Length: 66
Image: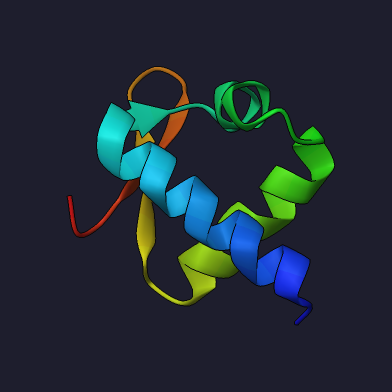
């Protein structure tokens, strides 16, 4: 994993801890990052069991350690 990818994952986690839950596109917009890069970071964080998906009529993600 590159330093950029690791940095993005940490930024995603920080954003989710501060905001509660969010949609992937909202995370990308808030971090001023490409949505595909954020999607990949979120997928990796989910595999690491650091975030969880919420299905509340639509999909959201949130940090597990909020």
